[in-house]
Image 1: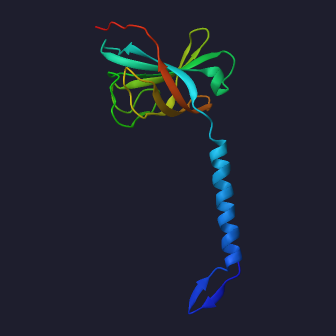
Image 2: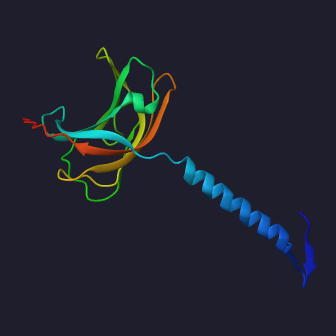
Image 3: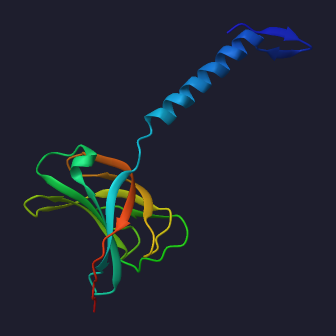
Length: 161
């Protein structure tokens, strides 16, 4: 890069500044274009292992480009579906780092479950409106599942306890 001295400071010529600004704008446009639309998912009431209130988001594996024998990725949060602000749950070894708060699982079409590690973020959760969020989860094999989702509620009733 060529610099000129003016009053003891380094200045970048205006042509280089313009080129740099255009490169930054082009990069930003590429990043925005690469962002995928949220994946359609479902959300439903569920029961925590101790029969307390919970909810579960299911994302079809085919929408994630996952191997054919996989049916869906399921994220269970073991608390009532009332989250007012953006909240992230971290899953260290398939279970949440917060004790007794949930699990992430890759389910096969044959019913086999594989725990996943990573994180899921919910913008908010309310039982009467769709739920937006995102996740980055990793299987033991190293396969990664990253997506934003828009989940609509299923009309199932869960009776826990």
